[in-house]
Image 1 (cartoon, rainbow, N blue to C red):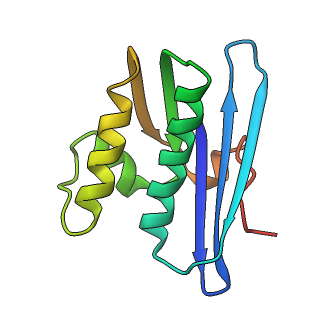
Image 2: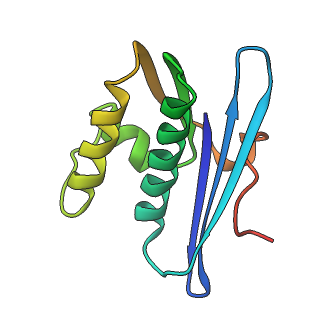
Length: 120
């Protein structure tokens, strides 16, 4: 699962690409008519992606995010504070629904899968 999010004054966007073991790509882009922070949008992107994977019955999942903050919150490298606590808890709860799941940081320039929602 590859996710990307972008927040800007005109609205926000989320890009999700789920690549199956047989290399089938499921792409989803959401345009949100709200302005919020990049961190919240990154969390919304991963939450939508996790919901998609769960809906499709995935049992194992490798998640790649271009948000160092989100990856490090999940992996407990960074302490979660403020409003991010709720988002981090939601991600952790959803991740527990898989038999095996990981979240790794993937710099945006290396994320050849994601459609970079809202960047057009």
